[in-house]
View 1 (tube, one colour):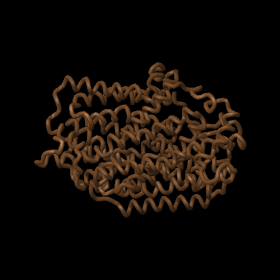
View 2 (spheres, helix red, strand yellow):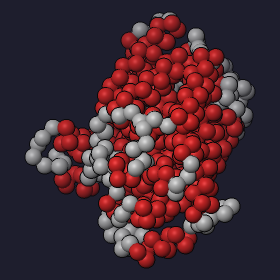
View 3 (cartoon, one colour):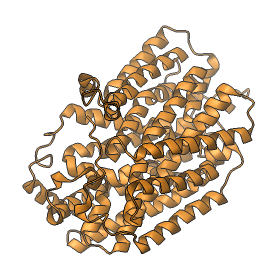
View 4 (cartoon, helix red, strand yellow):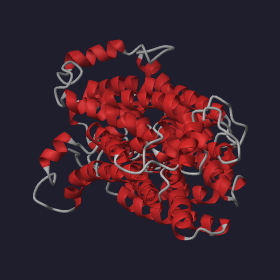
Length: 552
């Protein structure tokens, strides 16, 4: 069950007591000005640039953008706190998120690029020759972005509170307004350029804080990723919790369920998958995944070290870490640098890195949501002859409206940062991953099967979130609506039950309905052709251009 976030009670650490901090504030202001400048310089006037960056992004640049897009403020700040609080159980986040990349690399990255559309719902609509399927996928994309951005707003507000000394609510509004501004202006092209910058800033700040903490405390020298064994042992001998008794607080079922949901979610997130459409060919799409995994690894190797260092420093300077509040745990990376008594400017840089992580992910989510509304719903379902100008207007209005709603909800988030992100991963994994995977690898999957499968996925994925979150906003006299459903299908881990149920539904319904049209089957086969495609080419170009696919 999800616990509500406590935004008060962190004053005893002193992290939020220092008021306005000049050097960190100037650093952050320069960083934000740079992002706005890049957004203005790469501002777009065409839908190709707005949704897929003109399919012009190279593999290393795209790998950085994938890492920045995917390493949200939850990965930067939240995973360390989950490992610190939950020990072995918290490692499920590292294992699940990382393993999902291998599925993407082997089974989906190149195939998605060969299919060559604009958005993830675009794939569903064309592969399953269904406007209803496109509408369900687009609506799910908006839901995922909606849930995911709330967590980013929470992290951004906390960091602005530390740097500017402003109330949390002011920090949320300020940084969300800046993000909305440059994304609405620049689209995917400018967002991708900014994501590359944001990755360099976030990983540099993260590693700088980790190395400085290890050196200043005498705990590590050149490789803090593998030098914190003594600190972990000290924690294990002092604290009788998950570090010494794995799965004491949560069972094996929930660990496996969480891992499966994070793996499937990584492969189903629209704002990650759409990055493959920005590559100029399938080879660069595959290599972008490899680079993305490498860049992500640099951060995840440090999160467990931060958890060990932060826990010890909290015990030494504040009190029992098991009494840490939600706000303190959500800011554990920055709190670690602060409790290590590092210079204020250095702690500010670590906080600025968290803001860069949040801005990068939020930008990607806004782009995926706006493309779902403007391209998939407005143009494909409502007005087929919509001009590029109309599409851009609808896309930018979507960013403004969605931004206003999630900013309001981020003022009172429903759970810890990483847990809210976990819900969006579970939703993507349960509803979208099965239709993407079977759509690419099983040419007999039908329109009726995909629609039935996504409806089953919404029951498990969205239903489990409503089951646990709604009672926090509407008093029904208990913590969850249906306790037994929350036990078997947790909101952060619905894919273990949901993915097999959705895949079985698609297979069974497809077997009893009319086969897909032959041109759709040719399109699927072309996604696996051994013949390399030319730059900017897609499977549809080959399959419908009078040619015969190599493996047809």
